Image (tube, rainbow, N blue to C red):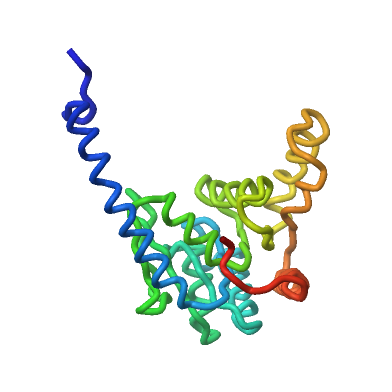
Length: 229
């Protein structure tokens, strides 16, 4: 007898998988239609567990304000913590504040600083990540957990493999990121030769809002502001 998953037969699973394509298509269409209208934006990533009285919540808010002051909107994952701080900074600075929300068993709920007409809901992580990559002029990555690392390394991989054009990936917080960057250099590059030396230039580590703006401005003195693929 064939095994079952969740009480369903394999034939039932196969049928459900086929119909899921239409839901996936719907999320792509809705995302493309809404985000194609928002203009140049920078995505901010980081932990949902960061509290408003913590150092990196306050720093994220300041980074977001600076980014808005320089003509960009802000995109976040729409939830609490670092995401809320990014949307709050954009809101207080009078800029575009976008939230790409996803239903999770814990941590995720909409924050109140997203523009009413720019809050999108997703069921699929992979669709949501496409939206981040396509409509962001840069990634600002604050301290976070597995989800933050997932979004970071997917962007690095897409640029490394030339699936998308290069854009700035800025890691904020040398006390958090320096150990990871050193491990990548010493282990992936120097010891095992699993990456090339130029790959180390795909990310930059900074500590201040001013450094974030300097990287963005320098990059877009040379490149056009446009969707990434």
